Image 1 (cartoon, rainbow, N blue to C red):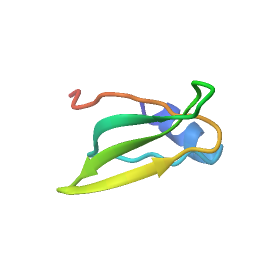
Image 2: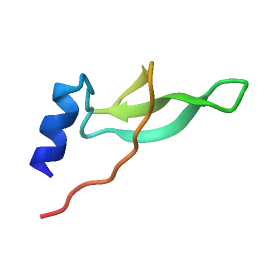
Image 3: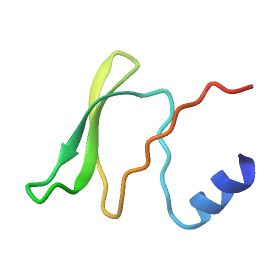
Image 4: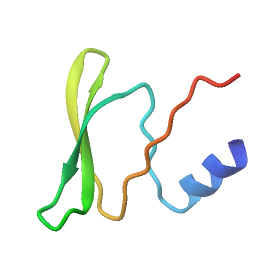
Length: 60
């Protein structure tokens, strides 16, 4: 997993951890352009310019 994260960061990808997604933000044309999530009790909206990647974690 570490090489994937390092490569993504080098390419300018910003990762957000510890967030619970509540809904996707969708443009009129159906393109997903962000998410509404909860992070440490607060609601946050994250808008994407080039794409949204959803992943689950907690693997050991």
